[in-house]
Length: 323
Image (cartoon, rainbow, N blue to C red):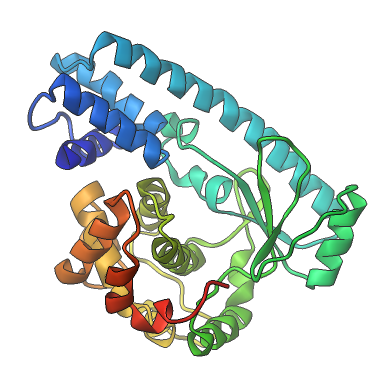
């Protein structure tokens, strides 16, 4: 079933025309549940619609539920986008340098038909200022209960719509690795601010290629990684097409991965993207590794996090507590 799920994803993004075989009713249901778990039910519905032309149809009741989910996602994305625009405008009025991350910061890379079906679960923005100034802004919204994490705090302005304000983008559990990450980010912070088509500031594709990889690693370690996040990452890499900008010190992508200690992990993720979404090798950060990739994919698709397996595979990260 898992292979059929990946095939449906590739149909949805235009990498395949049809599935290798018709799923059974039970398999269709399992594909649907997997899509929901990974935040891809809307994207996969586009593939379901495409398969109608090939005579492959999900059971009728399931198709109706799937269609309803897709329509709900379209409506939610419109509301999210309107509120994100309002937040960015408020921050600009206070002269806070802001970049829209993740979700709306990368959905612009997706095909036009898919942009309203790529599910956003939160609004994430990076503000280039001190934590104290961010807390002052949050208090001005009327929020008194403020809990600051290592990288971000929650802005509670809309019900059922999380807003995360980031004062750090990268983080690692290992304090020595984290020190390298913070130093590297401080040197290259300006790459977080590129004018997007909608007049929002967003990270450059090259900066996203690093930041999203590192964020995905931390999500994987916490058991919160999804294929939905990897689809966003696929679109970023598909956009830059291997033409990565040099970083501020003149280093290239390979140098940055080595400095940040992510070469092995990046190689695994590249293999996963190739196997599941058909990423062209010319667009990759580095040469893919099947051994690392199979481990990453197993962790990604597992319903439960295996602390023991992660500890054995990434001991220098797992030995330290969450930030």
